[in-house]
Length: 144
Length: 144
Image (cartoon, each protein chain N blue to C red):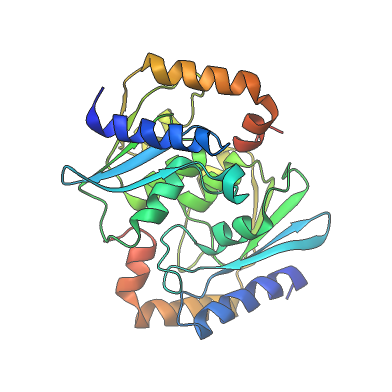
């Protein structure tokens, strides 16, 4: 697996080990990981900290995002995709979009390059999680 | 002024008094304010805490948003609009969209009702702020 996606997957596994939703992200700038994050809805009772948002929070005020790439274990939802568009992050690499289609079209319509690695390990991890935590997953994506 | 927008404006003024960007929000559920928030980019060095996001963070895990209305002193950007769409908040009331057009069309395309009060006090407050803090404002909306 791509080393950056490996780091995002580590974040997802960390979240799972904390009792949280297993979605992780890293932000890469000029070829270096500048921030990592994972979903913290459960851990911090925080509905806005999806993996990508936590990662951008951890990155802090880095100025322009034009040389960044967002890696995420799952296709971004509209919250995260809207942030990517607003911050002008030009490229997003996701491990999968089988378990959640997210807002790929929206990002592409706004000129964001989206690459889907279709990573079986991540698909299986999320499928298992959603099966065992259907209500929590529904809450996280606004399907209540 | 509408009492809910008055509360959002109080939040914007609070942010300004803290040295921050003067944008405030409140979330109303079943006719009651359940959370308040304001932009905290400067105060907490946090790029994801726009007024609306801080408000949703402060609201916590409230379950469905179907009976909520988001009040904001400024038209939401794509980050905040994407969150509103993902969380299925059905209605947004803004004080103004003269100083920032935001993502009104995107929200309306996704079925969100958007009301713009065109409030002169808020327009003047933001115009003055942007004039005096052009670079900071550019940073906040990803225009760097």
